[in-house]
Image (tube, rainbow, N blue to C red; front, top):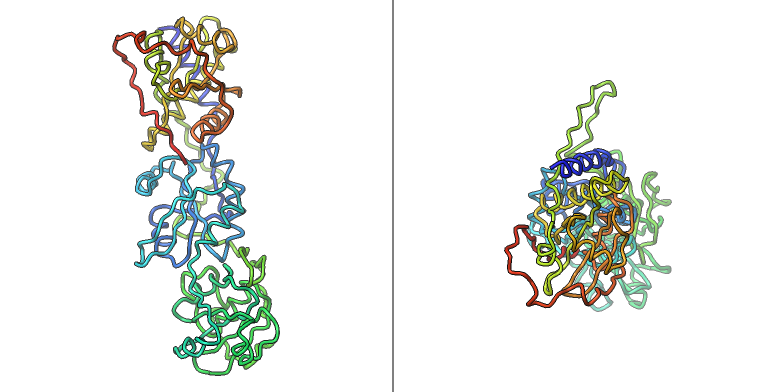
Amino acid sequence: MAKSCLLVAAAAVALTSLPATSAFYTKSSPVLQLDGKGYDKLIARSNYTSMVEFYAPWCGHCQSLKPAYEKAAKNLAGLAKVAAVNCDEESNKAFCGTMGVQGFPTLKIIKPGKKPGKPIVEDYQGARSAKGIVDAVTDKITNHVKKVNDKDYQKWAQDLGAKAILFTEKGTTSALLKSLAIDFLGSIKFAQVRDTQSVTVSQFEVSSFPTLVVVSADSSEPITYDGEMKKAPMLEFLSKYADPNPDASSKGPKDGKPAKKFSKKASGKAKEASASEATKDATGATSVVLEDEQPSESPDPQVSPDAPKPEKVVDLPPPVPELPTGALLQKACLGSKTTTCILALVPHPESMSPSVVASAQALAALAEIAQNYATRKARLFPFYSVPAANPSGETLRIALNLNADPDVEIIAVNTRRGWWRRYMGKPSLQEIENWIDTIRLGEGEKHKLPADIVPKEEEVPEEPVQVPIKDPDHDEL
């Protein structure tokens, strides 16, 4: 009992020494912070394609993804929405469950569906890089731009209402033009005409490409845009002929007054918004950088610096199950058909060496990780501790050429596939969680298990196992 109390006390110290979680995405981040209600309002009912990350602040891969995700959000501003949901927040756990989140980070692309509030949800399985995310999202932006040629222009132009036509040398429709069509969906019809369509090009007296022309609802005379081919000034120009949708990715005229009357030729360049700027032209744009759009449902509370701070209460997670005998170790993790297990080979508690403290910190970190997964009902392979009193632990150390007692060793073994891996980092929550994530993702180097580690099937004792074994299936992200 004294030995167990020593380990529990050391584990408590290790837990309280772990850093507290701060705000993952700050208020100034280009990533929208969402909860279930915010998702329904800003994403599910939006005309824009969105990328949503479901994360937990303690997740090592989430922390690694954060810089690239924020960069992607900045480059997609004005084209699509990039948001995040903290699934570690108690109020968000049910929502994350309904979205099928089982591992972190989970990225999903949300596209508008045929019915409002019923979007198409797709798991993103691409590269965890800014470019990979931007390319995937822009490829999924709904295209409301009609490609028009000389034969069908007159038929397309018969419809009433304002029309915007981009004359271009390129055959593909840019993400920027698609986003503008979404901004004015239902109020301005958009078309794209290639430079090879000589009849239509001549009709509008277009001599250079790209050229944007608007035909207003109350005039048959075309108005040529002569500003920069960037999102903010183009949006401001088009706002003179129709109001953008309330869900538009950026605002129209800043003064909120009715649009000024227009002339045949728009005079001068449209002023570029000071807080937003496109990064590519309309014919090949994949990204623009606009002013950050933040949801208003949950503003950060203002707390007086003189206010007393509440005491921090640490709730210890359930300890890692122990395998005190060779039979239990064999049945749980070293059988011929067992799958992935994480084993912590711990030293004798009475040695009172620094390794005892490291062992307690490692066990505390494993217990914390296991509790995080159990709380959100996500699957993870089981963790066990193997005390030095278990002779099979010493046998395992020798067979795998590990450090002798009193050093703590953390290993992953999979006897069904015949491999093992050794943890080489510090006994910290972050580093151990990162290592476990690489195992879940199938990353990193594996070593072949020695043949004598796994006994023959008939050698497995029949004694009952008292340690519950979790489903070893991995959470593939």
